Amino acid sequence: MSSYNRSVSFKQRAASSPRFSRKTWVSNLFCALIVVGSIVSFFFVIGCGYLYVLPNLTHSFHDREDRFSNFSVSDDTCDVFDGNWVLDDSYPLYNASECPFVEQGFNCLDNGRTDNDYIKWRWKPKNCVIPRVNVQRVLEMLRNKRVVFVGDSMSRTQWESLICLLMTGLEDKSTVYEVNGNKITKQIRFLGVRFSSFNFTIEFYRSVFLVQHYWAPKHGPRRVRSTLKLDKLDDISKEWIDSDVLIFNSGQWWVPGKLFGMGCYFQVGNSLKLGMQITSAFRTAINTWASWVDRKINPKRTRVFFRTFEPSHWRYCAVL
Image 1: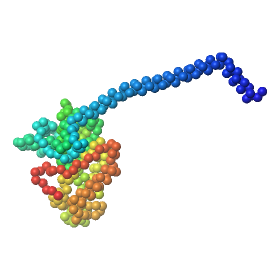
Image 2 (image 1 turned 90 degrees about the vertical axis):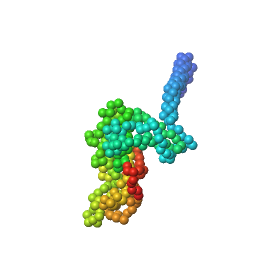
Image 3 (image 1 turned 120 degrees about the vertical axis):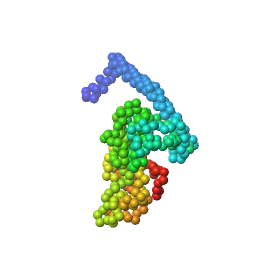
Image 4 (image 1 turned 135 degrees about the horizontal axis):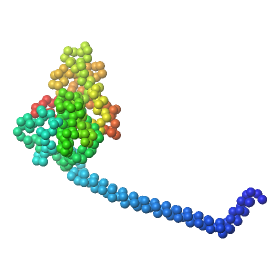
C-alpha cells in the first residue's frame, strides 16, 4: 500500500473514532470560547476608554469655553487694530514706582507729573472685548521659555513693562533679577531679566536699525561718517536665534536727523547709496530681516512678531 493510501485510511479511521470526535468537539468549543472572550474584552476596553476619555474631553472643552468666555465677539470678526482708547479706572495693571526695572527717565509720576489719567487708558476694539490679562496663566505659559525683544528704546520700554506686569503675580520679587546685575539703561546692548522660580528669561537687545551700523568705508566722501549695511543683519543677530518668542521693532531712527544729520548713509555690498531715500532703505532693510528670519528661525519652535512703527516718546517728533 502506498504511503498516500495509508494516510487516507488513517484519517478515515480516526474520523470514525468516538475518541477523536470528542477531542475535535472540545477543541472547537475552546476556540469558540476564546473568540467570544476576545470580543467581550474588546468591547469592555472600548467602554472603559469611552467612560474615561469622554468626561476629560468634555472637561477640556468646558475649560476652553471658560478660557474664552470673556472674549466677546460680534459678527464673527475681531480686528484688534480697529478700536479706541477708553478710560478704565481699574488701570494701571502695575505700579511703575514699585518696579525696579523701570528706567528712571520714564517713571513719569516719580519725576513730578501731576496728572495720572494717562495710565488708565485701555485699548478697546470695536467688535470685541479683550479680556484682562491673567498674570498667573502667562507665567505658567512662559515657564522654561526664552522671550527676546530686539529694537530701539520703544522696544526696551515694552520689555520693561512686560517684566513689571509679570512681577505682580509673584510674592517673592527677589526671585527676579538682571542676569548680569546691570541697571536698566540705554547704553547697554544686552539686558536679560530672569524669573528664577519659573525658569524663564525676558531679554532685550538694542538694535535700532536691525541691520549693521558700520564705520564709513575708506576713501568715501567726508560727509559719510558711518553707513548702514542694508544687506546684512546686525552682527549680534546670532544671539536671537534660540528663543521661543522673538519680538522685533524698528522705525524711530529711520529719520533724517538720526541718519543724514549724523553723517550716516546707506550701503549695499561695497557700494554707497548716497542718493537712496529713507523709505527705500527701510524697505531694503526689512527685506534683509525677513530673509534672515526665513533662513535662521525654526517656526516650529519660535513665534516671531514685528511691531509696526509706533509713536515717539516725545510730544513733538519728526516724521518721514
